[in-house]
Length: 153
Length: 87
Image (tube, rainbow over all chains, first blue to last red; front, top):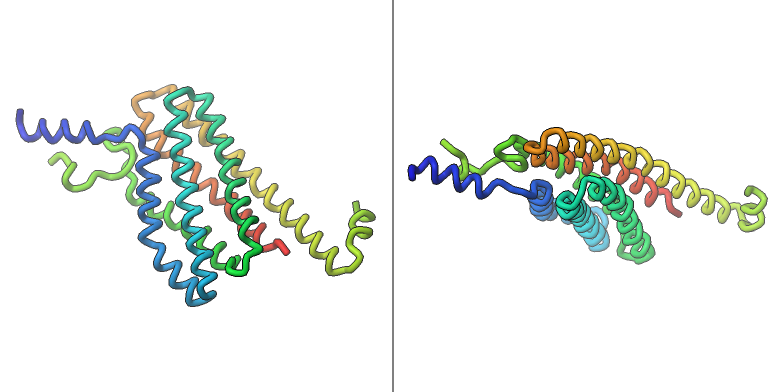
């Protein structure tokens, strides 16, 4: 077997059957990478409470991506109808969880609304916007762009 | 409705806070309608694409996931306005 065939086989093995899960994991990892920036800005502006609020927003954003991907991954194997229903139900459920979490902590002294809101919006949109640079969306690589080691030369 | 609110809120400040809460809740609810319609459209078209070309399902799922996430950002804007308006 030639080297090219070996590489092709390796690539075929590595092609993801769960593209949304890989993207969500990638987004969650990047959320960890950008978290110090938001924590520091919030800590400078609003103190420890601001930093904790920003951390809560980051956790909620990562949870939102991961749950959305998990719902699609689980239901797409079963039926398109279930996928449709679950995605729409999941949207409502995730908003309800987000609202529930915030409503339960907003009365605490440490909760600061402005750093929480800022981090939630900027992280969600910023991560998605930067993620589009890493998306391949081709037949060979349906999710993320391949790394150098996996490219067929 | 106005009479009930007037009776319930004995002071003008309390009534203002109540109206703020009603406005925040209404705003959040209205802001969640648009993304709901958008997500329905995204998923519906993705399922249609997967049914037409099953071999491109991976690509379609990637695009669908990103489409859903971008659409959800609109609901998050509504949510942020909601928590900023809450008294």
